[in-house]
Image (spheres, rainbow, N blue to C red):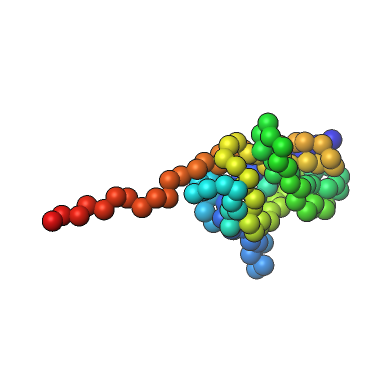
Length: 138
């Protein structure tokens, strides 16, 4: 049985508060802009909440370009099931220097024990970083 993914959120930073156990997300986003390619997105994190985790398993993210050649596996998480299947299990992590070979549509794919169970798309666009023309008044 596969877990039910409640959310996959992209953000700038993720951490779990040691005292309260709460997940803290800062700077959520759905697209990335870059002045040129290839490039790297400096601060990126992903948060996943799932339920109906019937047994222990391995969750892993793959970041890939849709209909493209680029794919990158991220380190797996070993997930422990809860005694209550309705419990929400939260996992997340920070990715420093997310590679972006070119503009286009990308996706984070969540695998559970090797099977795809969810995706989260992100659009990567090129922006013009040229300075605006100066208005010189004489």
